[in-house]
Length: 247
Image (cartoon, rainbow, N blue to C red; front, side, top):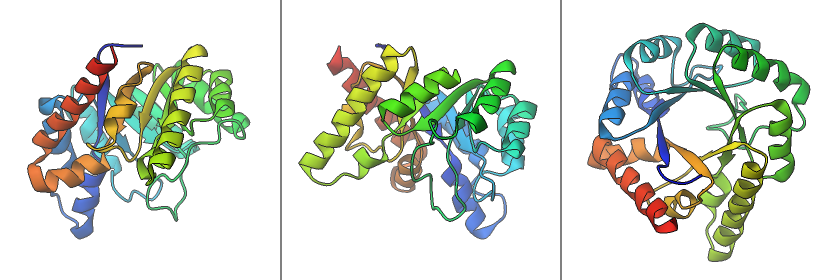
């Protein structure tokens, strides 16, 4: 995989800010439209069980308002499956979800949850929804995703993004490199995301096996200082520079 690296912009935390006071502002749908103007290739939204940020009404409006592909992050539950099947987003990324966590803390256990995931993956694919699994960069999880028939995996970049020392960063980046190679060898389309910033995105964006990065929290936070459009355009530029340098 080489050439253009897609940028999916996660607009969840626009809704988080709105929900802190209630009301209508800031509007995540407006953020999605601005992201499209700034060069995003897709929009990601996570409809959590507790509706802590994106709501069902937001999802309804996103489906009806945006022209970019919508990637619905969802837990592997009957409720979320029904919502995905009724809304028909372009893609559904299955993620682990626990009520007590602040954000998605780890990768999905695709290997240990095969029997739970298999019928969900099958029904989503039968509906024409591209399925991805958000997993740790581990060989057995990649192999489990391939056995499940999921065409896409998103590598959890959190440990890399949160590493502090040069040694830790190098170790975590090496895990991502190895996983990207292995996943591509299995025929999986490789994506990555979680915790990526201007400062750490280039080594990940340079990996030629990756087709897409999904980035949200950092961009929404940076938008407080620079505006959403400039934040997305700078991230797009960092990714493009990394990919050009890897050719």
